[in-house]
Length: 197
Image (cartoon, rainbow, N blue to C red):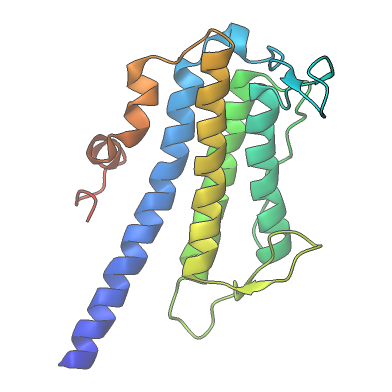
């Protein structure tokens, strides 16, 4: 009886992690759908560099480059951790359009969800057994930490996108900046039978 309950609890945790990752891309799509196109390639503000207040350096990636980085990182995870899965083409951070980024994100999200589904499986024949974030860092066993890293990476960059759009004068509407936190609505829109649990 206890073993059955433990297995059911683990299965529910796995299902919630997979649902959360599936909704993760809906958050990215929400930002893309509401982002002012003028913000897409706008240059980040310069920030002070070094000890002299007169010295300045470029402010970092554009919003376009951040979205390209998110997608291209997913492609790298797929290449390194699940080479048997088809990988979408990478995005050029200097040339991709918002429409191309939205389409690419949908494709890489589907494949990353397939990779995570296999990684979190209890089946003895699962193919995703390790998570290789990049070739220069140690590999990890595939599992919950893999999910946490992938979700945290994307959440971090969503925060950058929201902040940068605001700094550039193109603050996203509440439907986007608040919408990424309306998980019950995102779950419902995704067609999941249960709300977040």
